[in-house]
Length: 201
Image 1 (cartoon, rainbow, N blue to C red):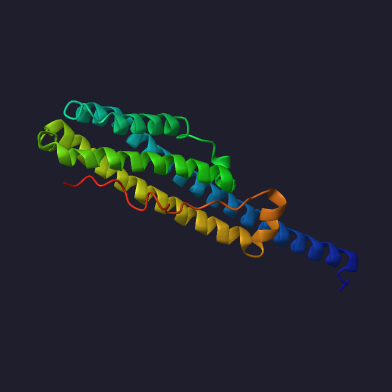
Image 2 (cartoon, rainbow, N blue to C red):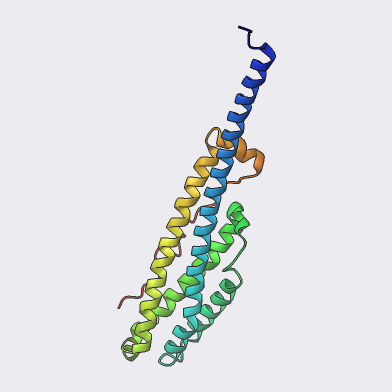
C-alpha cells in the first residue's frame, strides 16, 4: 500500500483552509450587505412617512385659513418650514453615515413638526373650525401620520443598531473596515420636538 504524497496532503489542507476562510469572509460580507439593505429600507420608510406629512399640510393650512384668516405669522412659519423640508425629504442614504448632514436633516423635519404643532394650537380659538368635518378628517390623517413617523424612526434606529453592532463585532469588523461599511447615525429626540404635534382636542 503506497503512502499518500505529503505534497498532496499539504495541498488538500491548504484548499480546506482556503475554502473555510473564503466561506467565512463571504458569509460575513453577505450578512453586512443584508443588514445595510435593512437600514436603507427602514430609511426609505421614514422618508415616505415624512412625505405623507408634507403632502397633508397644504389641505390642512387651507382649511384652517378658512376660519383663522388673521393668523399670518403661523401660516408664514409653516409655509417656510414646509418649503425647507420639501427639498430634504428624499435624500441620498449616504447621509446616514454623515452625522452633520443627518443632524441637519432631522432639524428640518423637527422644525416642520413644531410648526404644525403651533398651527394646531391656534384651532383652540376657533370652535367652528374644530367642528369642521374636513378639518377633523385631516386631523385624524395627521395624527396617524405622526404615529407612523414615530414607528418608522424607531424601526430605522433598530435596524441601524443591529448593523452598527455587527460592523464592530469580530470577525465582521475586519471585513467592514476593509470594504467601507460605515457606522449609521441614529434619530434622537430634539428639545423642540420631544412629542408629535398634538392633534387631539
